[in-house]
Length: 92
Image (cartoon, rainbow, N blue to C red; front, top):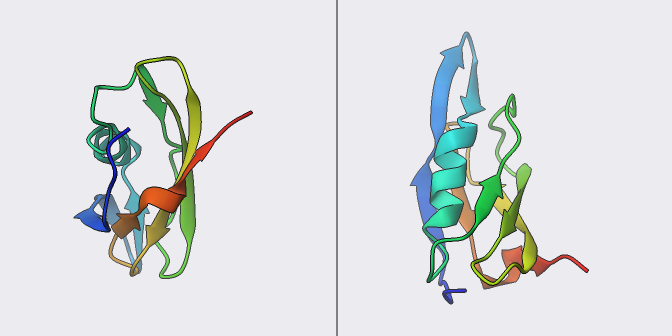
């Protein structure tokens, strides 16, 4: 896995009146880009509303088969998220 500093990305899809939903595919692509070698799979939940201070947990399997929970932190209500090294948590 690549060692990250802190990364931010806009990952929003649709805007209903007064709310923004995180785009699961864009979140998955974001997580995939955080690995040095392309992971086998990444799955993020859909239907998550962007809310400052909230989190979104994705599941990833790296190129060697090791499983991770990857926690994305919502920086604002607009869909900006951050992730750091400590947010990649191996699943036992």
